[in-house]
Image (cartoon, rainbow, N blue to C red):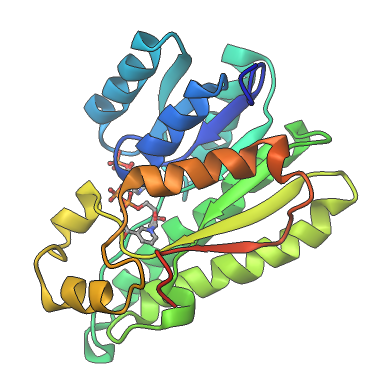
Length: 248
Ligand code: NAP
């Protein structure tokens, strides 16, 4: 029996990268999935196509998670298309590193709006629909504990995600809704390629500090998300799962 049969999931930022892999992994275990995108409809449609080709169910839904009405639209789409909601993966995120001299109001607001406010607005819209056994999975970052230089704004958002995960686990525990975070180390994604991290001293330094001796791949993270979505993790809430091959 598939571990997520009959369950419905919303995965934000699932048009590429870690979110796309999580959407496919949840669907492979039987969940019906809302595949959210902000700008990459083509990417989201490809993820939906791959899920359908494997016999799964998914729908692509556009929406900027940092806008309350659009975040609510994702949740409404889950109810409209699939009739319920059991799993929310708050994955949408942006990362742009800058030394303290390069921090701007624009960089701060953009990063915090998507990485933190977006998570709060999507969760706020989802909670009324979640019942006993539901799972919220936030995607944080190992950056919140490694604190790399030139990442004040990004790492600040992920420190906030850690704290919010703990708060929501306590706030929603009485309703038997679990809230956990996956904190990846560097993972090879479209976003990481676009940011120019691959092949740099930053990547080499990360690998050198990683006991398992490589950067992550999206499947390394997707399998953890599927575990946290399923009843296999039914006794876990408020946990921050470092997922960086031992990087800390
Ligand atoms: P990515 O390849 O750049 O993909 C980012 C996803 O977020 C895309 O689907 C993008 O949608 C979506 N997105 C961006 N802004 C959005 C918005 N306003 N509303 C809704 N969706 C939005 O990123 P990734 O590397 O997979 O990272 C995914 C998450 O993992 C992020 O939270 C990131 O901080 C975290 N993380 C990544 C790494 C890493 O090394 N890759 C490490 C630790 C943590 P569109 O493409 O449609 O615009």
